[in-house]
Structure formats: C-alpha cells, structure tokens
Picture 1 (cartoon, protein in one colour):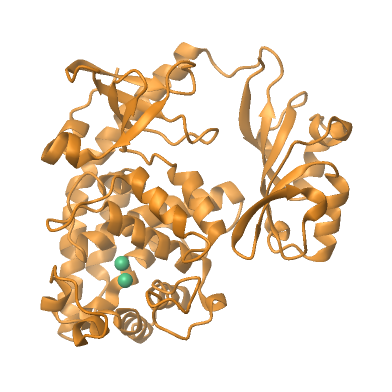
Picture 2: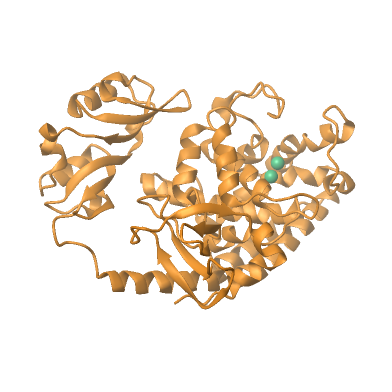
Length: 447
Ligand SMILES: [Fe+2]
Ligand SMILES: [Fe+2]
C-alpha cells in the first residue's frame, strides 16, 4: 500500500496524488455565493465537511450553501484527476486558489527516511520534550508567583503587568509553551494563579499551531504577547476579595459572592482598558465567559452579541474550561485530558464555537501530550506526540508492562507504525499513579 501523509501546498511534489483537501484560506470561511459555486463546480461529485451555523456537517458538495465554512473535501471522483494528480502546473494554481493543505499519497518508493531514522528522531524529540517540561516546572512556579503579585498590586490600586511579562520572557527562553501546557494535567494547580499560567501556555500552543496550519496571520505582534493576552484573561479577579477568590465552596447562583465572582470579566475589561491595553486583550478578558448560546445562565456578562466575541476570545474560553477540568485541585478530582476533550466536545456547537473547537482538537489531539493510556497489549504509557495524520495513533512512551512491572528502559511506540497495537483506553493519572505522576513522567529516559 502506498504511503500517505499530510502536505502543505509548498511540500507538494509532482506525482503525488491528492486524496483530500484539508485546509483552506479565508475565502472559504463563511463562503460568499461566488466561492460556494466555484467549489461546487470544481469538486462536483465529492463529499465535504463544512461548518454551518456553528455545527459540523458532512454532505455532498452539491448541498453546500453560502455562509458555510469549508473544512475538508474528500471522496474526490477519479474524473477530477486534473485536480488531484500533482504536476508542476497544478501547484501554483492550488496556491492561487487558497488551497493550503492536503492529504496525499506519495509516489511509490518515496517514503521519507527509513523507519529506523524516523524512530531515532522521534526518540530524540521525546527526550527533548521531557527535558523542556523539567525546565518548565520552575518557570511555572515563578510565573504563578508573578500572577499572585500582580493581582495583589492591582488590589492596592497599582496594576502593573511587568512581572508577568518578565516571567513570560523566562518561559520563552528556558522552555516552550508546548511543554508547559503538558504540565497542566500532571501537577496540581490553584484555581486562580497557576490557572492563568497553564491557560496562557495552552492558549499560545494551540493558537499558533492553528494559525500556522491555516496560513493565517495572528492578531498579536508576537508569541509572547499572545501568551500575555491569555494570561490576563482573569485579571478582573483582582477586584474580587481574596477570600471569595480562594474559597473552595461553591456559592449559590444568586449569592453576593457569586455575583462578584461573575463580575470579574467586566472588572478585567475596565482595568485593562485603563492600562491602555489593545482592544483584543480587553475583549479576551471581557468575553471569555460568553457562551455561543448567550442565553445560558453560565454565559456572562449577559446581553453580549456573540459576533462581538473575537476568535481569540472564543479560543480562550475553550482553553479556560479545558484547564479548569484537567487542572488538579486539592478539593476536587481532576479530569484526565482525553476525558476533558470528550466532555467539551459534547458542548461544542452550543457553548463553544464548533469550528474553533475542531481546530483546538486537531492540534491538541484527542489524547493530548502527557495523557496516560493503556494499549491493547496491556502496557501503559504516556502520550508524547499529537499526530497530524490520525489522532487515534499518537506516539506513546511505554513504561509499565501488562503485569504492572515498570521497565528499566521505557520505550517509544509509534502507533502509526504498529499494525496490531492501538489505544485500548485512557487512564486517570491520579487513579493509577497518584501523586507520583509528574515524577514518573520526568524520570522517563526514552530509548
Ligand atoms: Fe474567568
Ligand atoms: Fe479563567
């Protein structure tokens, strides 16, 4: 069987065969009638995935409508080989039309690198990732302290983002947001300060991965500023009394405490505007609890038009809930990352923007990095990669055999290369490893 892979338009080579069109430029979002007709005409007979009114839909291309956002074209009839057989002439044409990424079949004998070489590179990356997490833990503690100081200072009327910006600089030079975001589920966090750090890391990682894949420009001047923007989403909590903020009891819906807590987005917008922050930073703080169905009780402030909620803010709202679920607190059970993904998935299209949710999952995976999984042979390991090709088949670092004995040398298994092995179930770090989850993860020396 010929190998398939994902390729962006610059990676296309003559004699590849396009099996699917999987990423599109801006004109294919909320398609105007003209674009809609163009797609129907050129892909006649194909099947498409679109987002319509915030919900995903698979249908024949003939049924697409103006306003739909095109997500994927597949089952392309052989009669359209002019569009799928890659030639020197086709590549600039695809580029011009805004087709950005494809699932392609490689020409016979064109697999990239030997299996052994690919494995060695994966092992190297896995060990590097674990080292980055090690470095990230100290950075995270420092940034958590900076978040608390910033809120304390704002409480005394002296809001200043300087310490937080310095922490973000440290994170960027000593680790990666990608590694930081894997810590979220491994190490316990409080609901306010470490929450901001983890949410900022997860936001930065997912936002830029999405933007890169779509070939779109970021709204932020640079990656540090993106992380800063997400970091500040809960800044309004500076105006909520500390005892309410740090309380672990759940307040009644109509109570004074709950009303104060739910005012933090408005407080945040006031504070950030007062500090002269750009509109998009204010928007992220102001609207990160606004749900797609704005009539829900859990949507606040009330009376917001969802069209005013920026894409960046919609992503922050997803990241916010994801972090809250996977973040371990002393008083509640946390969710394993795959379980959190399934939970939010059920709310996408109602509470969260479906398209942005799909993008988030495509980059975070259905088994986000550091998820604990059991394979069909009974072995247990940590997920270490998010495959672009098939989210069910990540790379896993196996450290425990089916009888519960730990290996001396944990091994990397690439599920895309293993025909007889797959994920049987995801496991809860706490249930299986208790407080040792992080230490076990950090001690892995992959070979
Ligand atoms: Fe919030
Ligand atoms: Fe939050």
